[in-house]
Length: 106
Image (cartoon, rainbow, N blue to C red; front, side):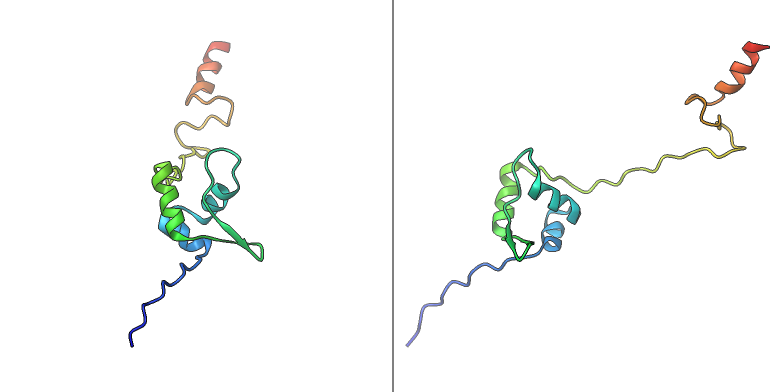
């Protein structure tokens, strides 16, 4: 006698899995669950920990058209050190401005 297969209930996943699924950091996922602006990522709390159903997260991402976005790497600004060209000891943002001021005073 063949029994029909029962549908397995969808498993809950942790924040790390959702972050990998959306290609963002765990911090971003946590922020999008608690944000006051925009639509929150659907989530559940068990014993104070965030849990998610991937099907609901996928629907949310499609509905919001990827509001989380891809992880962006910020370029580090190059800061000139003392003795290098463009260093002005923090007096002006314009490189060489200190020497121009000295020429005007004389």
